[in-house]
Structures are given as C-alpha cells and as structure tokens.
Image (cartoon, rainbow, N blue to C red):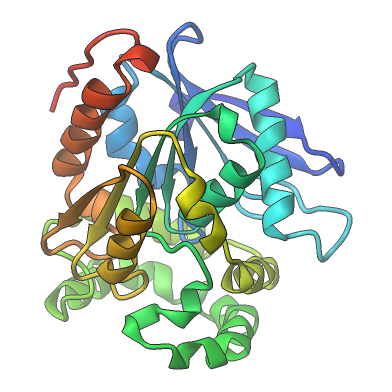
Length: 302
C-alpha cells in the first residue's frame, strides 16, 4: 500500500526528517490523517481507498517511528514537537486548511494542534481517542495511571525480546483468533491489516516508543474542547477498553454542535473492524456539514 503514495521526506523545525505520504490530486480538498501510536498509514487503508477519488490525502510517520528519523535531542518527543512536525508536513504540501481525522493518539494531537491553529481546521473527525491523560481512563478506571512508568518499562525492555516471536504467532492467525474470542477485537476485523500493522509495529525502537507514550500519558487538552468551532464528528467503539465510550460522550457534550457515532461491537480498532460504517458516516458528515470545503457532494464506492 505504501508504494501507492507519493512518498517524501520533510525536515521539521529541529532538523528531524519526517516520512510523508500523500495520494490524490493536489487540486482536491485535503484530508490529513493523524495516526495512532500503535499504527501507521496501514491502519487507514480502507478509508484511503474510499475517499481518494474525491480528496488529497496526507499522513506522516511520527518522529522516531517507522520511516521517520530520530531527533538529535533524545527527549524531543513532546506533543508540541509533534505539532511542529505537523506544521512542517502541511507547509511541504502547501495546505492552509484541511479536514483532520485522528485515531487514538492522533485524537489528542489534533486537539493540541487545534489549540495552536484553529483556522486550519475545516472540520475534525476523532476516532477512538481521549482528550486528556489517557491512562487515567483505560478500562474505565483511574488506577492504571499509576502504572505508566511500568508500562514504559515494558515497552523498553520486554517488547524488543518479542520481536522474533510474535510475528510468527500473528501470521498464523492464532493471536488474532484468540483476541476475537475474548472480545478484545471484533469478529469483523480485517486480519490482513492487523497482521501488517503488527509486523511493522514490532520493528520499532521501543525506547523511543516509550518516551512518546509517556508524553502522551501526561498530555491534557481538556481546556480546548469548548473552544472548538469547526464541525466535529466523534466515533467510539462500545467495546473499546483503551478509550472507553464514556470519553466520547463527554467530548460530545463539551464540544459545541459535535456529532457522535457509537459503533456497536467496535474495539479500539473500529476503523479496521467496521470500515464501511466508518466511511459512510464520514461521507454523510462531509456532505452535510463540509459541502463548501468538499466543493461538491461526495459519493464513494464500497
């Protein structure tokens, strides 16, 4: 899938090289995809295929992850650093305003970027995310926030040891099957995408991953919600243990005129479990609330 993109590298404010992916006619309205911490451009496969006929779609790898380079400063992984990276990506693509779509970590990044540049948001779609300190609400409890140092330690010390074991388990389908049986993943999950995500994920530098996770765990954009004036669509899976639906309902109440879709049976990976539902709901949102931005009624093909 990555080969279908116009791939480029852009330097951020501190010289860090960022891998940028873009597809579609540059004259068409832009959609900017902000990734989750547990995935890259692969997670958006269904959405990209559906919307690329009518839009220019752009995404990038977070600094230090996947194909993007490491910063010279070993601690430069704050949300502000990621926002400056997004600035560099938009500048390189000549984008002044876009529809921003975030998943998981990308939800918090979009909120933080809105704090800095509200004028750049034609619209905002947030999928399976939180608005503040996500470890405070994992599995509906505040207790896990105390475990953040241990989780970071797990990323740094244990995950690298699994890099040669988990891929074989993932490829033969046993791990995914077990996760479906336990309800951790929906039965409709696109297993090929999940396997591709897992393969790329296990090749990461987990010391860097742990640093990004720590900053994400401390991030708070709760003061931004009431200030958002662009059209907003929120999506949440009712089986999502990482960012429970209660968070989406809180955001829908606090963000003026926000819309909410709760996906029955959806986990944290709802975009690759129920892609048709997600795409059709986004299409409806664009046609009803962003028709001026889109330039015309958009009709995708399932």
